Length: 401
Image (tube, rainbow, N blue to C red; front, side, top):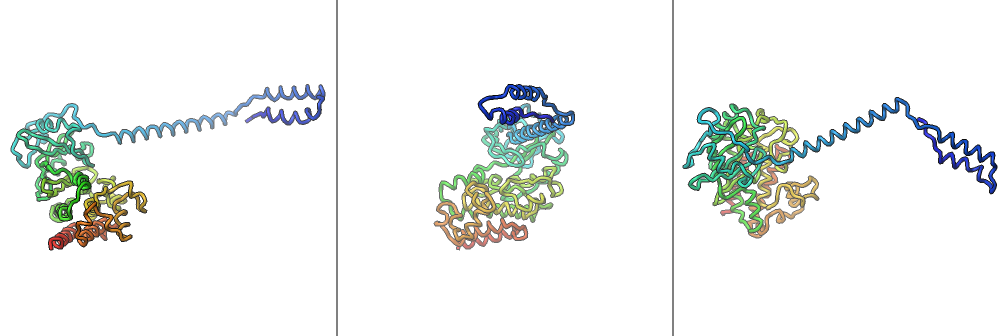
């Protein structure tokens, strides 16, 4: 590459020329001739250099294109799914695409009147969203209300296998499991119909609890209800069921604060979970057990961990993830926050406003200890849900005594 430096040459050339007041004419002419020759030199690149520059520019352009495409796809994934059906598929009278009913609710349930009762799945009637889809309030005629869980079709198994799995779930009955009334399944639309619980979700309950003092008796009763439901799924169902998404928004309450576990068994309806080994993790960040996040292999101890996080939320009125936990070594988790307070002898700071003062202290300490044991880093160190049920019953007995 030939590159001239006219200003540098000028400085060096001027050194002998401007050394005195008088400039020799011959030196002056020589200086001017050298400058003309230098200015006449062209800055050229060899073919190899031009080729290398072109290749480098092309690589940069391709990288920029990939970056733009990556952020565009990421933005699309973050966009909320449209909560309406532009043209709902029509129900048919026979075949696998009819609305299958497991339990009568007092009014006929058809595809058309259920979809119409949800407002065609509008956001206005949406009462919750999760990893498997969104839930809608559907008020039928005669004032009967049901909850409709609209599943993400792209994640579901084929219609035949879906039908087989959901029919097995329809046979599962337990006092602390939400009742599956019926379902609809086609290649383009799938939803489940549940009984509607007027008390809302445990997530809403915790938010309201921040504004008033809630006694430990109510809290321990809710904790026991969910523990009993999970123990039933783990040990008494055949085949046994792992929930994989235990969290307050999937726990519903009636007007008497009786708790019911929803979305149980839905992970079995997704193709990714057929062999209990997943390419991705079902669940919600903050509730997922460490070993499940690392290996994508779910177990009953994964549900125990999620249950422990829920219990810590219930006694503290805190969220699983919160910016106020940022100073903790393990990041924004309620587990690291509660562990730190207990380690420093500040257990009273874990509990919701007024709860520690209302006592009894021994019961509160036992609930905190149970929540921390359930969220142990090692799955081996966690109890089974059957053991959790026994512990909670002992806690309640001690409270009543």
